[in-house]
Image 1 (cartoon, rainbow, N blue to C red):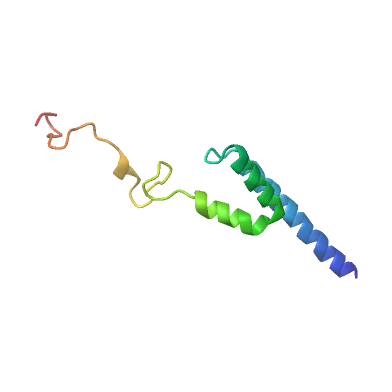
Image 2 (cartoon, rainbow, N blue to C red; image 1 turned 180 degrees about the horizontal axis):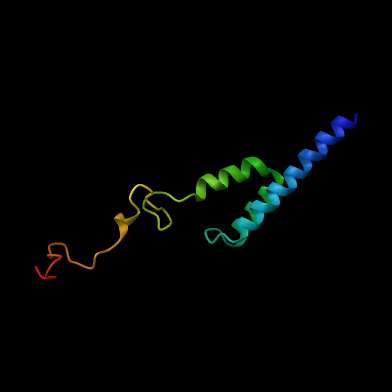
Length: 93
């Protein structure tokens, strides 16, 4: 009986900590506003683990977004300041 209560208490603590941490992260999110944000906050606490997984998969950065960083060659997105046919030595075409 004590083991069952201990496991239940551990599960409840994990639920509260995990949901609270993601709620704090989600409140900083700029993609959702107003009623949609309130709905998602409600669903995070109602169906915590599944809903958090859904929101994380929807809001993760994708190639082409501003937050996506190419880990293989991070300098590939830097700009040289030169035009498309300019000579790097002289700066003229």
